[in-house]
Amino acid sequence: MNIQKLAVIRQRQSLDLESKIQMTKKRIREWYEHFDGDVYVAFSGGKDSTVLLDLVWSIYPDVPAVFSNTGLELRDIKDFVRDTAKRGLTSIVNGRRVWRKGEVVQVRPIKNFKQVIEEDGFALISKKQSKAIRVMQQGPTEKTKNMYRLFDTGINRDGNFSSRWKLANKWRYIVDSNIKVSEKCCDYLKKDPTKAYKKETGRFEFTGMMSQEGGFRGAIEECNAYSNREPKSAPMLFWLEEDVI
Image (tube, rainbow, N blue to C red; front, side):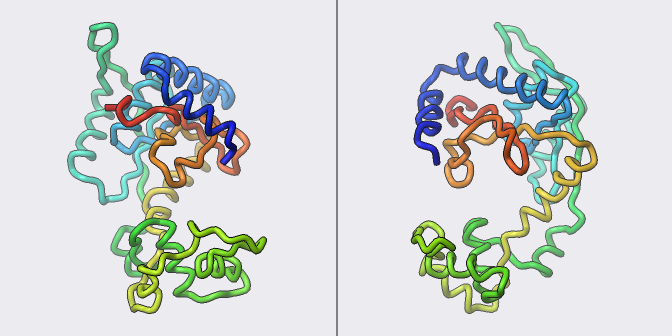
């Protein structure tokens, strides 16, 4: 990660909540205007995406919220998403209750959870570890030999060692077991339906990801990633858990 960009994120994490809200709204406007309004909010029904959706709708109520219904969500989440679609969101602004309402779109996967498990395998431990186990279970091929070596030894294609990519010894017994493992569960159930929506509508995503969450999300360096292979806006990137709660 770029050290300077990391320092900027850390500095912004120390700001007061009102400053964060104003900065987030600025990023929202920039993203919306850059794509002429062809944007959407990835809405999971969780607290982070709900706060983001409320902020987006406070400026642009025409922006749709897209809920990927995997079939595995808790009933409370489904009820909340349904209620949001029907009534909108409510928040307190300057001591007054304000309602905001926009369109909520539901997308669904082609495969259900049972099919994914039977055809591809279980997602275990984490997505990265599941991918490592899958690649090592399948064995090296011409296409995957560099990836196999990375997960097996931690050595990348340039010959450099990176311990964070090497499959931990405590999980290696799964490679030789008859447990079929795959990281593709999230892809089939959640990501693919959203990708299909993006392709069909030409819209670009707002997400409630925060750097504090760590892992892949902790490596994101900028709120509005225009030049990524898949452009994405994370206008709450510098928020902390306590800001949302």
